[in-house]
Image 1 (cartoon, rainbow, N blue to C red):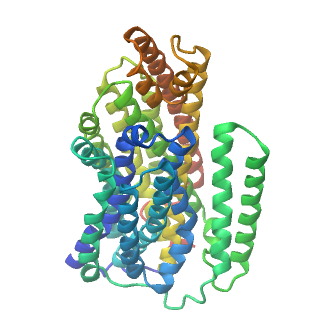
Image 2 (spheres, one colour; image 1 turned 90 degrees about the vertical axis):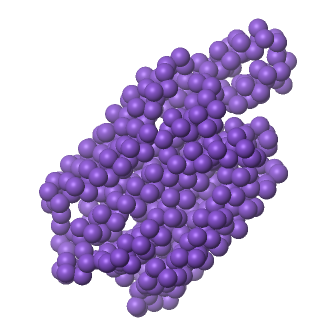
Image 3 (cartoon, helix red, strand yellow; image 1 turned 60 degrees about the vertical axis):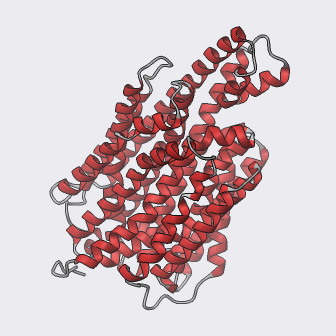
Length: 512
């Protein structure tokens, strides 16, 4: 198979790309805006530690569980149609989240957002695969899409800070609605419909098996990280692995599988998926902690924290530009490993933070992290798209997005749990004096609880409590950064080895 380079995209395709960046931008904005709103949500709804983590990561968990189904569905019913239906669902779920009055309601609304997001995510990349046939144009388009996604992480806090200083916390969800309306208005005119011309029959059992494999595994990892090994977590993990094995077995035997598992036999595809997972795991988990650190330990307002985060967008833009410029000449193994190593270096610099450190040091370190994210994501996503045949673009995109969303949600759960565990351990070891048992428990559970208790305590007790809480949270923050760096360095080594024979600029699908 030889892909023609004569069919180059025109003005309509590039305008269509702008429309496709909208849901990518929104997805990342939604996550980072929620980071900013987290202290307000904690104060208003008073979730427990477990509920707080579920509020943060249920969106990614549900999306990860349904992406494969939705990617396969998009190949069958049409990717543009699925994208627009998903926009309606996402907007409606955003309104439900905005007006939630209990932690349980917000968790349920975030789960519905994950359902809507699962219809959006695979459609965007699969449409790019069909709109941009020329390899260099496709790589540029993927880079722009990646820049939009990573840029949303920086733009989100600005929007969130502005909204939170003027409106209630639910406004960070309401902002999704006009963005989805814009996509619904321009999508039918700018985006071509595409689907698999011979998709075969949809397999409901495979859909159930994919969900049954992901959700128990997520439950197990989350509870193992929070509580350590126990019977329920181990049973859930075994169930997830067993159902996952059944899913793979069915895909191997099905005439029209949801996922062509043979793609994983290609080192370029597997390495790209692994790189996306590793960088999403590390960066999403650190994102939540970094924003919380700025607003609690460093004492910044939401809007000031957002302004400080804005320069980090430059790192992602530089990473995308470097990846796009060097990809035609430098082996992807070298570039992907370099991107992961750059992100790991940013994590190691974050690990040197102290409670009295200047905020600019955190931002500079985080900027290096975003450079690595932009570089790695552009290259890995491009490898995934060029490995899969065009008619299976939806399923391949779903696998890529599943790895990213699963990795990000898992990172929030695992890294967040590590940080929370260190915080609780250190606070429990030196229980604040002068507090009754209930207040002491609240202060020991989360740093948000410590801030709330300090506001009620006498000045001397409050000062001592905050000093201990800030030191404990900083220790959890820096240890988590070291864990993230180790994961990224391992990913860099694995990527360099797996991609060592892939030459620069040549689509893997042509060599398969």
